[in-house]
Image 1 (cartoon, rainbow, N blue to C red):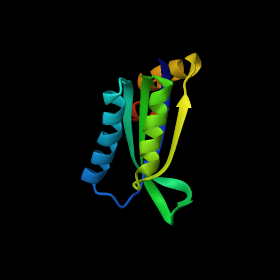
Image 2 (image 1 turned 120 degrees about the vertical axis):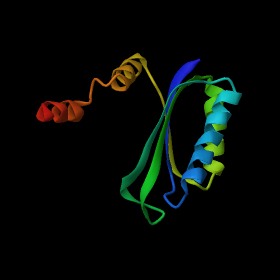
Image 3 (image 1 turned 90 degrees about the vertical axis):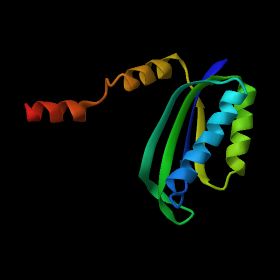
Image 4 (image 1 turned 90 degrees about the horizontal axis):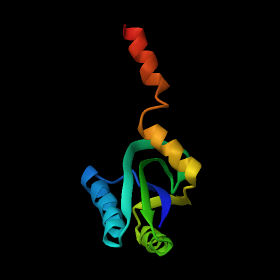
Length: 121
């Protein structure tokens, strides 16, 4: 089993329920095929760097998981078939990326929040 990270952008015209259903569908594909989901983050509605299908925003979602390489093919096929997904990217994580993700989840890079707390004191 290898570590992977998949980020996808859902179209902004979805309601919250439709967005959660789409994310749940992809999560179910991973768990039903034996993947271990390490991290699941919803980054919310963000502005895109450039328009995609005449849309300037999108819902970002990240999955970090351990799975067999064949499962990635299954997941990406389902993502390609779903009209709600505008873009996606799956990467294999090496030991350095895994260590970075652990630090990021632990809050090691939240300098903005630390600065705000110091300003309040």
